[in-house]
Length: 224
Image 1: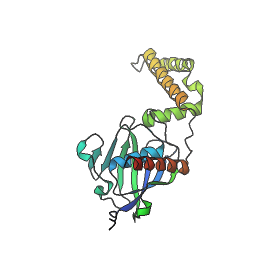
Image 2: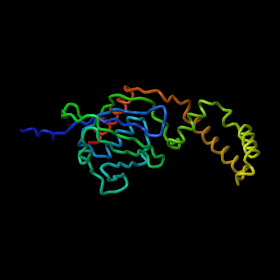
Image 3: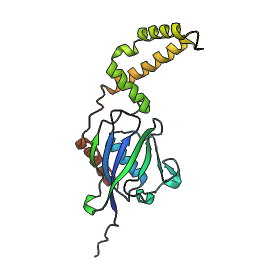
């Protein structure tokens, strides 16, 4: 009985950097080029430790591919015909719009014994899910660094009173309404911090990322 050899594939080494956040959040990982783009998305979510799939968009070579159109189902990464140093834009979570720039660092010959995706390196913790995207994450980091006084209603009220005195004649602004908007915004930031706990923006564990990827692959094999 003859054994059918698996089709050949390339192993892509990719570097993903999250735009519009600081400190830097980056991941270097490997995937086979014959995976579907939906599988690439699943790998990315698992690597980051995110659990809720709110869709994705990929822009490459002047084209856009997203998870909401049936005609892109079955599309594989190799169909992009990526070359070394080429970049693509990957928007993970179409609600919060996490904007990642992915660059091809290397293209290697694939080995049947080394098909599974792996996290090779990284920097920074993934932002918490559902925190309002890059702007919401920046506000959470600012609130954590500055302390509770930055969101204290009395402090906000005093600041608005001072602004009204200085700019009241120059700007046509309802300062009371503006104060309510700012107070409500900071309250939302406080609630997100309470829900997620203290942020550790510089933390990264390759071991934990690969444990999540291994669990994903084991789950997929169990479905076959």
